[in-house]
Length: 60
Image (cartoon, rainbow, N blue to C red):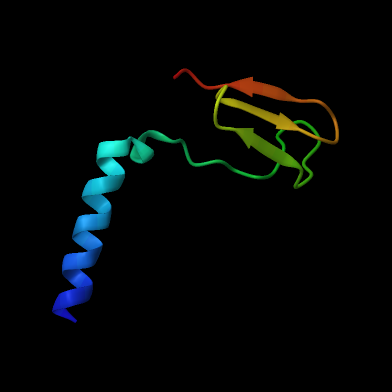
């Protein structure tokens, strides 16, 4: 169990270094059409609905 705790701590530190803790949690349900069709483009910070065309941008 100690090995797992050390591994988990190392992984969390590496994720913080990369900046993955800054990625927003994405709700997959579209607020406009209420369907489960939201997708997130990590390069542009854009959330978009493939069904109704809803878009939202997150600042980098």
